[in-house]
Length: 236
Image (cartoon, rainbow, N blue to C red; front, side):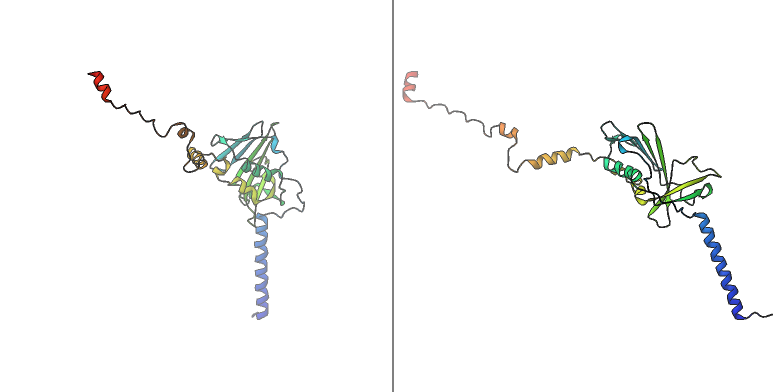
C-alpha cells in the first residue's frame, strides 16, 4: 500500500513536532520555571556597622576581613594588611541592598546544572551578635548577566530528596567576589614615592635648610703685615 505524499509530509511534521516537545521538556526539567512571586527585599538583611567578619572563599584562596570598633576594615588572611574599604563595602552593599531578580526551585540532583558543584564563591557574613549568614554563588543564568545563588543552605552540599530556593542575583555579586587580591588592599606609599614628593616640593636652585645653615665660603685668613725698615733696624 502506497501512502500519498501529503500523508507522509504530515507524519514527518508530527514526528518533528513531537521531538521538539521532548527536547523542550528535557531542558525545562533541568532548569525549573521561575516562581511568580516577586522579590522585594534585599538578598540579606544586615547593617554594615554590625558586621564583625567577612569571609570570601574563592576556591583557590580564602579572604578574611575584620571590622574594628572604629569601622575600619583589616584583612587578616591571606595577608595581614589594611583593607580597601570601598571593595568591602561594594560586596556588602550587593548583599544588603540589591534585590534578587527572581526565585527558582532546585532539587539536589540539579546542583550541577546550576553551577553549584564548582561555585564562584562562598561568602560568609558574621555579625557582632554571632549571627552568621552564608551565600553560595553558582553559575550564570541563561542571559549571562546574572548568577544563581542560595542563602544559608541546609544541608550543604545538597542531599538527595532536598529542594532549595535559588535566587537569581545580578552579576555585580560575582564581580565583587572575583575582585583581584590587590584591589582588596589599601595602597601603601613606598619610600621612593615619598622621597620623590619631598624633592618635588623644593624649587630648583633653592637651598635646603641644611645648605642655608652652612656658609658657602670659609672666611679669608688675614695676611701677615710686611716688615718695615725701622723694624729691621730695631731687630739688629
